[in-house]
Image 1 (cartoon, one colour):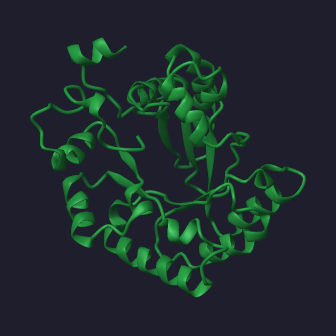
Image 2 (cartoon, rainbow, N blue to C red):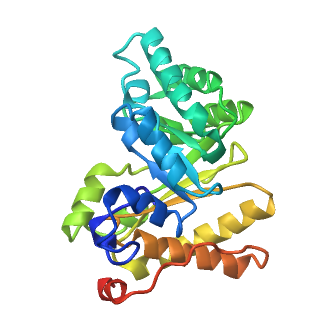
Length: 281
């Protein structure tokens, strides 16, 4: 998931009596990783990071987003300041390496091909032993005849994973409800190019709130994930939906499809059953 708690998940993934601070532990009993966006917005205290770390099992993996001061102000801030913030962030993550998944550098649509050298420089500064991934949103980086090739070669040369954004589902219909209106305003509408540049490919799937409409894309991703697993890659998939209420259900559906295609794959995702869950869908 892109978060470990949601109001609609109360009395489903965790009981209403469970304090908010303890929900990460309960979440980690269902899912094996989580995308953490709070580090994008603010500098999370070391004590808080350690509490999250201590709350989950050894097999759990956090995927932290790099600070926006590093990724979203490349044209505004002095490069030395950006490098300083990047190094401070890496230092904060260093004690957590045993439970780190792919850390994400997420660049905005305003980050065009002129900033490619900056992206590569940040990748080269990565000092941790855990995976690093890069998400770009400017359409220049999806032009197969030019800048995309340069980006992919640069990432591959550095062993950095490209984040594959699949927002096709939420743009597949008109925005007929508030969550779709919001998703179509905020989510990037970029081509879906599932190209591997490292050993830990990352997928961000933005699902449609009408769950059956996701079937064809879930089928496509199950086939791709099965292919990557056969190649001994270690993919990480973050499943969103337009309001994230149904994201766990979509993740479970994808997990089952992968199992159906990969006899050696042992699914770990088992959603709890409850009356509240049944009433949601």
